[in-house]
Image 1 (cartoon, one colour):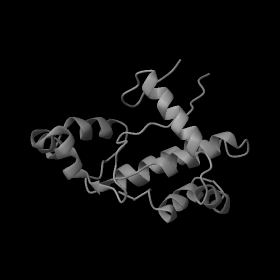
Image 2: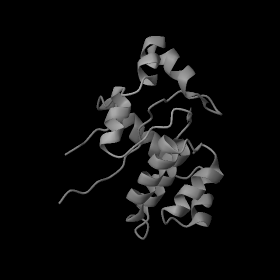
Image 3: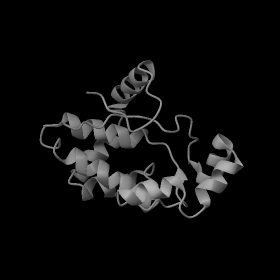
Image 4: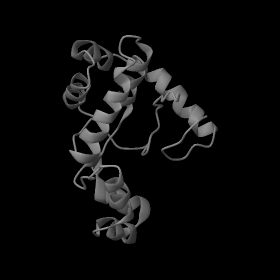
Length: 156
């Protein structure tokens, strides 16, 4: 049996508040040629996504994900919610990567959490505090120390 545990990882650690346009971000990070490849039909990202049923929405913004990580840590640490943690992650992936939802906005994130079976009022309470921020920070630092530089990664 394999137990899957989602751990925090920042794809874009220095995202400005309010996020940024994805294509502008990718141009700054990888250059115009990479963005041109990303924009063509049959590009490697879209091909890989299609193999697992994901259609990437290219209009999404690059956003801050700390609050999403905090909610995941809360769900994982709460015995009655632990089973819903995987559903929550899957719902966040769909909402962000396919539906281009801005999960840095609490209402959007709460809608996804509630839809995945997490109690909205309790999730809101977590978001309106600094709960689990230290856990996310510590785990992120640990991942960097271990040399993890991309996702997915697996520890066995």
